[in-house]
Image 1: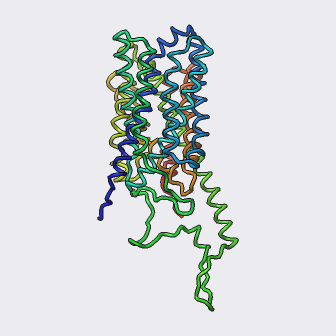
Image 2: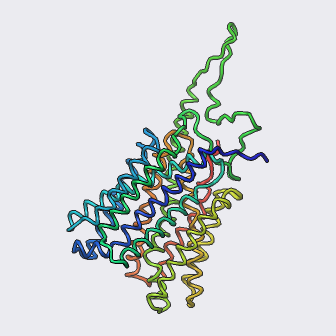
Image 3: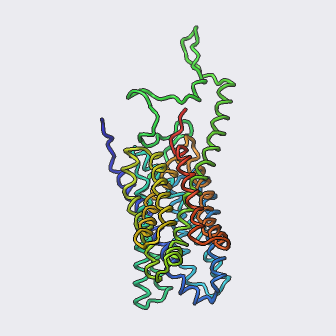
Length: 435
């Protein structure tokens, strides 16, 4: 099998996108680790903080929806530069806030920038992945987790050393801008065409494209026949009514697939949200252990998720992204069943580890699918998928909290169990469109 030669500019762009993902995770972690200090400084109650975090997430969704069309119009490289700059500058805002009003404004700005950066950097990642012609998306998401870990460690170290949070966040903001300035010129320009979109990465899911050198013509375009003029021998393209109907049908199919991908993203992010907010409490309440032991649950989940994302690209290249989602969610379901039935700490931790590994590769496959729907609106498609799916991250913990007023927390884990089983059933939606 012939191998694809990757030019140096594309390799450099890949490294630059890696750093962008890590930078986003780093800046987000710098806010998270300073939440206790910021709440003390601004004098807000935990209930108010919860409302502000929801507002931050809402601003993020607004940023996603705005960034998608802008990235399609001006290019993802431009939007990465703008969104990352907003995120880097606004991470300082919570540290400068002195009360509820100023903190709310700061978090709205930070959330907006973070949401816009999520969409634009993933759109840039799709461009790089297309150039590589093989799955590389999961590694980008692994670097986001790695950046979050680095931010958590550095933030904790700064607090341990007694640094003022304004100094720490100022250094994070300046450092982010400096890194961004070095990265942006190395990102890829958006070269897709509305008439002939870039090819999707080659995986076992990909439909046949015919012999080398033969251009594949999508079925929907075969109605545009080339009519031979008998007198002059010239060829004149003629658009028929059937062709217009086919284009309308393609647009409707793409909208349906966007909604289907958003539903899968909702279910997977719901599971992630439940693990983040409830895993430690589930272990403590179900097994009656101390807080330190209970905290290992989320460590097991996040550790295997990070490791899984580093490995998923090779797996997706070998078996296809549909298999990654289908069998990954089967593994996650088995882990959740173990969590609900185990009475022993090691087995319960194993269950959370299985759950993390199982869902680790799903979201990157959804981004790849959304970015390769065959249109010139890849960023808009991705913004719709991610903003709708993001509700799962918010709704999951809330749903569990409500259900726990009726049944024990461990029993409430049936919600993410049902979610991942539905992902398994409908995993085929992440496969390439077949004309």
